[in-house]
Length: 251
Image (cartoon, rainbow, N blue to C red; front, side, top):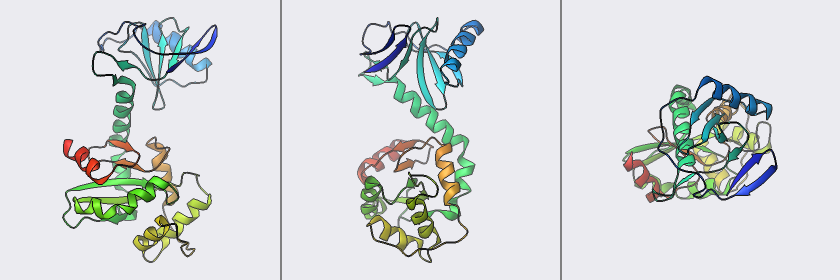
């Protein structure tokens, strides 16, 4: 289901064959069309990064801070939702593009990620084949599930290295818990305790938890766990060890 904004109001529709699909084109919209669409989007307080022709005839793709909108050429109808390719096994074109945008942002900021390597809490595989960086929050149930299967990841040769992403933000109780973890004399043990919902001693020190969180926000992360694969792919959510290995081996 997708939402369309029009002059007549807001309605919900199913995006099926009512639009004629066309193959994606590299042809750029005219400057007049770009200006008209940008003006309309700005009037809705939606900043515009790029405007391109979409894979659907009559609709233009608007990228706004990592999000995707579709708008008619005359800028009177706006669609926010997913477009599926009905002739290609219902491939979600919108999600594919979002994944490309996420990967590009990670690759663009790979140096910033590398800068935190000395601050990462690492669970190293004895026979390391792959390294996955995970933005985590100890209060997140799927983060706890991922952590409970650490032996499984490590057995398959997957090293997991953690960066902090307190979902409630800076100065939340979770943020202070994560500071205590990173400031612990044994951060690995402190992380193990926190992921089992055990209380850990309060600690404070010079740390980069705030900067790690801000990096996650820069990469477009808004939930945990968020897994960054070796090729820069951002995989949101928990993946079991075998499934993660399959994904890594495909790259």
